[in-house]
Image 1 (tube, rainbow, N blue to C red):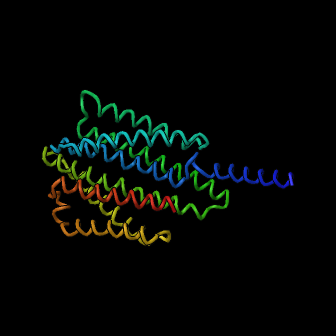
Image 2: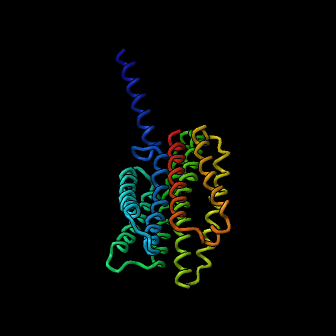
Image 3: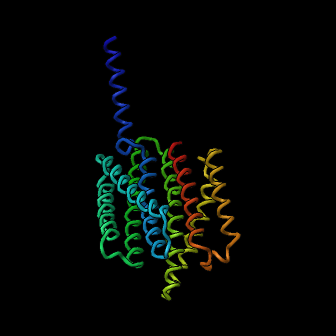
Amino acid sequence: MKKLTYLLLLLLSSLSINAQELGYGDISYEKATNISGKQRMLSQRIAKVFLLQKAGASGSDLSRELTSSIQLFKRNLSILETNSKRSSYKVKSSIRKEKEQWELFETKLKGFDKPNVDEVMSLSNELLKRAHALVLAIEEESKYKKEYSNNGNDQLKVEIVNISGKQRMLSQRLCLYYTACRLYKKNRKNSQNLCYEVNKIFKEMNDSLNTLLICDLNSFEIEENIGKVLSIFEEIEANEKDFFDNKLPLGRIKSITNNITSLYNIITGQYASL
């Protein structure tokens, strides 16, 4: 009897250790991918708010959005760093690089000499690049561990969380570039590349909708929320000429893209919880 009890305890201990090894610290790889993916979105949202303020927008809602985005970015980075103790060198290196770029970006935003539009775009794009590198490093580590442990089928969840989570970033990036295009036109600067980027972002978001719509992991609730995103896209397409000519009010674009971000935040959380 004592021997049987000992074997059971040993088995439970082994299962517990294996479960820890298959996770990203104390959280799942799905959740880690979701959190690191949010950093991509926040890098664009912070820059977006800054440019909207440059364009003349003001109000407590905008100030709260900026403050909460900064706080969320720092808290998420702390969670990712704390749970990376058993992670690969690539993951740890990616976290360090993201942290370095964040500190530079935050210092610039809070400094006496506020960055101009070009600097904001450059800093946020570099932060986005490093945040995306961390998502890929976490996804790669997850794939290796799950394949090694014969849990390769679960990797689809991690990959779809990444795809869905990326749409949050793209929705904020859409508003960021829409605002930058407006500012450049107003200042009579060459806005062609910035305005063209709006078209590219919109197309990528539209294509990704089709990918998510046919995903085998979809539940009824997920498909219902994807349908809500489709409805918002139909609203944009109904005003396609004004949208692509950069004639829609910035306040409306901000509202539309924030609604898309909120929906994708829900959808990504649903995928991560499957």
